Amino acid sequence: MLMRSVVLAVFACFAGAALLADLVYKVGHVAADDVLNVRQGPSVDFDILMGLPPGYRGVQKLVCVLVKPDPHGAAPSQMPEWCMIADHGGMLGWVNARYLVVDTAPPARLRLVAGYRSYDDACQLVGESEAVADYLDHSADLVACPKEHPGIVELQQEMGAQPVTELDGYVLLSIPRG
Image 1 (cartoon, rainbow, N blue to C red):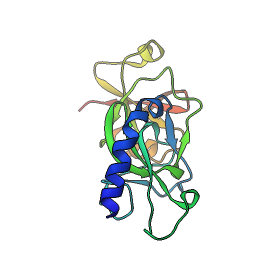
Image 2: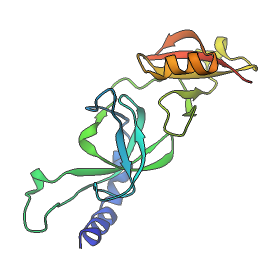
Image 3: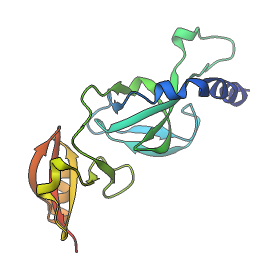
């Protein structure tokens, strides 16, 4: 029954999807040593697809629904809101909306292409732009990690990454290709 209600609600909400996608969000209200679980569907009853670290940016809400946990209770104001999300054009899955905050200062000068070590890595491969032209090198990858992110030290220790500058809240690292 829950699944049918959710499916109908999702179908009804697709008309507003374009309006939701205009804003960019980041992961918030998540402890530094935790992740936001991205799920297959809009509730904790669905499998976890991946985790997004605190501060993960570039998230767009595609569709949001209110999920009634108990068919006989819960006023709309007490129902959790779940959103289908995407990042950089690729659909990820569903998250509880309370962990998404509007990103008021998205990294406008950085073109983040994809997670570096894995799809959901907060440290991301940087694409070409005027802001990073001086740091691009055919023998190394340019990677951006959020400031203070543990991935910076990991990449330095495991892959010989060298910090080259800070830009838009990110540390840019040059990682030799090997």
